Structures are given as C-alpha cells and as structure tokens.
Length: 243
Image (cartoon, rainbow, N blue to C red; front, side, top):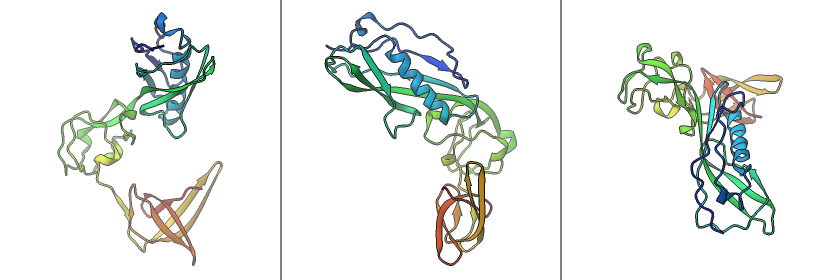
C-alpha cells in the first residue's frame, strides 16, 4: 500500500543526559498498518544515542525525521526494527534503516533524518574578511549546531587568537578548521616527539619528520633506522600515532 508522508515531523530533543525534552506527537492512523506506532520513537532514540557519542559533553541533540518515499509500496508489518547503517554517522543529514522483522513480507527501507547537535562554539562577533587575524575582542562563545558540517567547530575562543582566516565569515559563524589557515608545527628533518595513546597507557619516543608537519595533514616519521610510522601533527614538534 502507498505510505503517505510522515507529517507533522516527529521532533525529539534529547539532552546530553538522554532525557526526553518533548513528547512525540502520535503517528497518523493511516500509518499504523505499515509502521507500528513505536517505530519512529525508537528510530529517533537510536539515532540520538549514537549522536551523543560523537557530541561534546552536555550538548543538546535534536533528531528531525524526514519522510519516506511516497512511491514505496510496503506490506503491513507488526514489528519494524530501526538500525543504523554501517559506516553512516549519526551526524547532520543522515539516514536510519527500518527493517520489517515480523510480517508476511520482509522489507528494508531508509528514512532520512537530520541530526543537530547544539553546544557552545567559538564565533566572531563581527563579519571578517579573508586574511583577517583573529583578536580577542572579535571572538565569543555562542550556541551553534556542531553537526551542520562534518568538521566540528572550535569550542575555545581564546585558543583561536592570532589565527588567520582563509575565507570571509559572517558574525556568529561557528569557526571550523577549514575557515583557518593551517599551522605548520615543524619542518621536514626536524626531530619530533612521537606519542601513541591507548586505554590506560601512553608510549612516547623520538623520530625524524620526513615532511613538514602541517595541521590536519598526515605526516610520516622515521623512528630508529628502519621503522616509518604515519601520524598527525598535533603541536610543536609533536606527532600522534594511532594504534
């Protein structure tokens, strides 16, 4: 049967502690045949829980379901299981799978959702042009949607003082790494400290950089005579290598 659009949108606001801030509106009666009434609340809760794992502490997570394709023809189902597709982050415009597990015909469809993550971020107080160097009086903290772009914004306004913009930004724009000129932490041939962090331990050694260490770009480091490791420049003469 044809599934009508899911309207009005179900809106759940989930705090950093996972408490529901608003009770969802009941589904239209016409939808109850194909989608049991608890399907959307469970789907939204699943996405919200996954988004909290990516969000900064104390963030408000908001999940806005979209609509199924009105051309879909699905058999009635008494149990629909929401699932997060592998490799699809619960961030920004994304999707959740709805899988019929109890019904005459098993089916699987994708429901588009939009995830918004509200938390303090560093923003300029005035519009600034490309090439501007950030000063303390031009920056403040304001609540912003961290999930509006793949790269999260900076939270600490003070840490951005002296950084240079590579593009013009408007007042209130959450500043992200691609708005700023990348820093070079060391030059090719420099001796660097190589750190590997794991659960309950940290290992550090010295190596020689095989290329310039530019913020946001992977760099290779020679450790000893023969071992070469790849890592991320994270500070002055400092490289972080994953396990």
